[in-house]
Image (cartoon, rainbow, N blue to C red):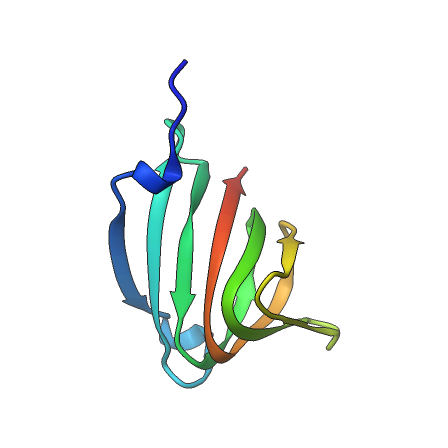
Length: 115
């Protein structure tokens, strides 16, 4: 078995903007560097960055995150908010609905499993 060292992975950068129907404030450019995808295309590991803005989220996947830079506020559909900042690690479960607001440009490591 060969281990895949993420630091040595060939990383392709993808920049994009969110769909207009998701936007609440701003129009943040987002960038993702996918470091690993499994053969089924259901498991992903990488780095994500976003400029300031706020948008609606609705998770069909399971995601584990660790914030590397910046500050964001994640709010569920009941209005409960959590502020995340560098060093914070958390899981967003499948079925989570709410908003993501980038207060200061945010970068995170992520691991996603799409069932």
